[in-house]
Length: 137
Image 1 (spheres, rainbow, N blue to C red):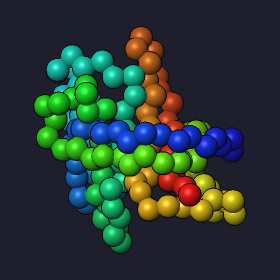
Image 2 (cartoon, helix red, strand yellow):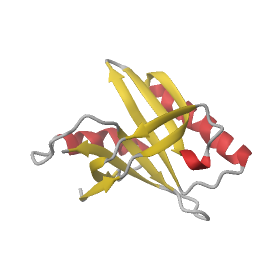
Image 3 (cartoon, rainbow, N blue to C red):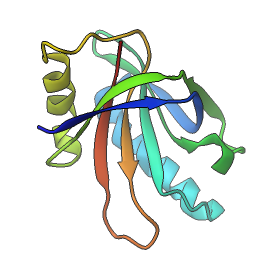
Image 4 (cartoon, one colour):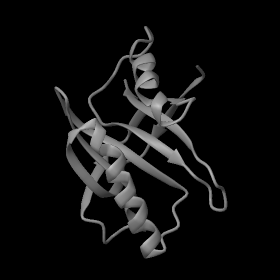
């Protein structure tokens, strides 16, 4: 698995949030993607933020950068800092495996912040890539 270190400035994501089992996340994305299409928003990337995890319940926000989605109801601010990033090779089903592999790396010292997925879907493309972003020191 190839990784890279990226340092980002603070940014805001707006979209739709849920608290519940991980199995509800695809429905949240369906709703967000429908709204994006209905509003004519052109976003070349979107984000799935893990805001909190407690037992089997996740607090998750699916959204796009706030300047593209002012009317969306939920928002989260991703604090500036470093992240270790890896491609989730194999699509959505590879996201948990990729997160686990990053967290198991001896050289990784996690910091308190949001971890997230970044979905990269350039305008005009039919597919997308998924990157996993884990906050590090």
